[in-house]
Figure: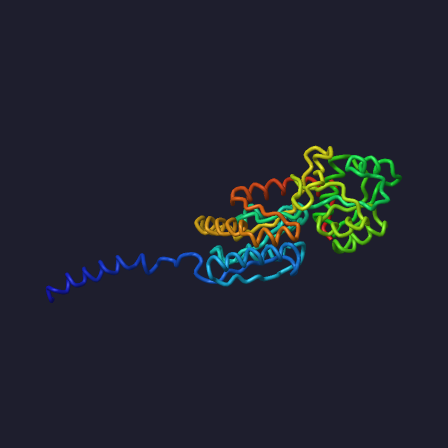
Length: 326
């Protein structure tokens, strides 16, 4: 046997041992395009906010960000698709209050648990909701609205964009928190419900401030308060429902980025930092401000806590009101 073979073999083995970690190392994230699943049709808040986030990630990292609209079943179809994707950070979803916080209490056979099956990346923005009434209702404050509802035979009617929608739950929470006598009239979408409030076919609605604002300006609707936990920047003159005397009331319709559970912590941190930093950009603030949206920019941990709190809140409302999904 050639006595030079053993040293040569040992040298090769040493080189292989040194190179193997490099060969197995994963390229730095992100190394390719990212997909953001939007669980609703184009043009709604989910879609608009996702596209703004995607644009900022593209500008930062130089990789394409593909928006994939997969609507249906109150957003649960798209979120379920995200849950089943590889947990590598290349498939994200723009979840919202309805698909992440309302769905667990609304759907008996929901295929995912938001807290178990998803990693909360960053809460991005919330859409202010407001209380709108037809001017024939004798009320200029929420307290007067509650009084009017109890004095009116049969109560006051409120519209929603569908059974189990955020607009439905917001009014049911007001009913439960204040003792108001309110009767639900579901619609297939926000627009037809707003139309009937204006026409006086129904008395009131709690929904996206932007849906009401043009009609308030011309006197066809009266806005009494905002539903969120703080006053809205787009309408600072309106008190919150809590400030109006309904202690503890708050409904924040938020939208945030989630990913399949198991995404590496360093990827979650990198995504969160990129999204939160993007929300500080002047063009993003301008775009959201024009729409009446407000940026959030929470940490992953804060977003997880928000999801948990709202699941508990809306599950109680759904159970007490006996709400069933359409």
